[in-house]
Length: 169
Image 1 (cartoon, rainbow, N blue to C red):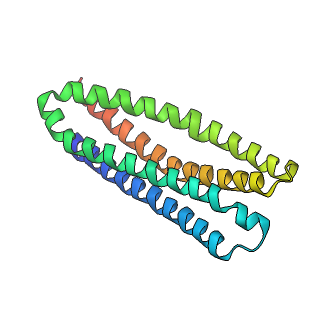
Image 2: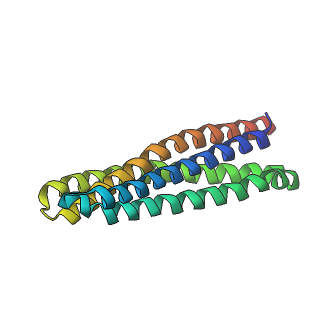
Image 3: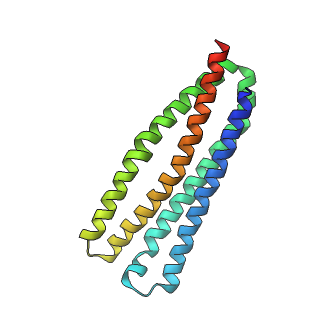
C-alpha cells in the first residue's frame, strides 16, 4: 500500500470537509441576512446576531481547516521521503489523538451542549437568549455532522497507517 497516496486521499477529503464547513457558515450568514431583511417577529429579529456569529465561526473554522490541510498535503511526500518510519509513526500518533478528541469532544461534549441549549429554550423568556440557544443548537449540529464524517475518515486512515507499520515490522 502506498501510504503517501492514502495520506493524500485523506487530506483531500479533509479539504472538502473544510469547504463544507464554509458552505454551512455561508448558509448561517445568509439566514442572518434573511432574518434581518424579512424577520417580523421578536424571535426572528433576535436571530440576526446569533446566526451571524455562528456563521462567522463556521467560515473561520473552515478556512483554518482548509489552510492547515493544504499545508499538510504539500508536506506528505517530502516528509515521507525524508524518513518514512518517522512519518508513519507521527501520523499514527496524530490520528490516534485526533480520533480520541472526536470521541470525547464531538460525541460527548457537543451533544451535551445541544441538550442544555434545547432545555434552556423552554426556561428562558427572552427572545434574544432563545435565539442564541437556537443558533448554538444549529452550530453544534453542523459540527457533529461534519466531525462524524471526519472521524470515520480518520479511523480508516489510522488503520491503513497501522497496517503499513505492521507490514514493515
